[in-house]
Image 1: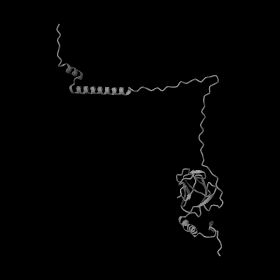
Image 2 (image 1 turned 135 degrees about the horizontal axis):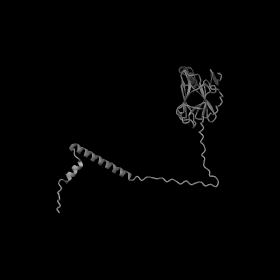
Image 3 (image 1 turned 90 degrees about the vertical axis):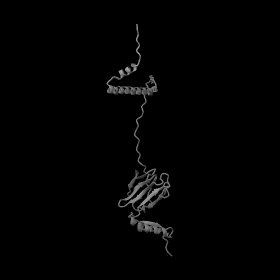
Length: 244
């Protein structure tokens, strides 16, 4: 009779086989990742993040692919049902030859590393990651079985500049404060301004026309236009002779 196997160990990894009965699909999938996928993509062996939920429980997410997405949406690699986590909040990604990075993807409440808000940051062993209010710890190897929950590190706040107090004048005893008369708004009457402007422009146009006409008449006849107009007006008038 075969002995029961509750747990098997590969390297530093422990696999629970569930009461001694080997679940072949899960076991084969694990071996495939360890023997094929990780060597091909040059992923570090068993890098992981420990994720601590609001109810006090926690779980370990192995970083077994180049990109691990985090968010409230069900299509995320790690789904977190927390109100402070956006539908697509952030991701943890492998950069070949450089290591693991965490990136915020436009979340509402931001992503922080060791308390500092980030858009993208390289991760080092033991770094604390915050997706909204969800706290995580990054491990370059396996996460310890009983890892202590990280203390909450709020984002740094900047104190508002101090505003000097407003000083109010206080009247001395026995003195009455002088009443300042209210200034009445004065509005200029501009109802006739448009009409006067039109008259002035018309007058200037008429004067310019007359001056131009007189100059042209003088150039053509070398005579004064005023005298010619008077002469033309009085030429046909009958002369009246008054006898005494």
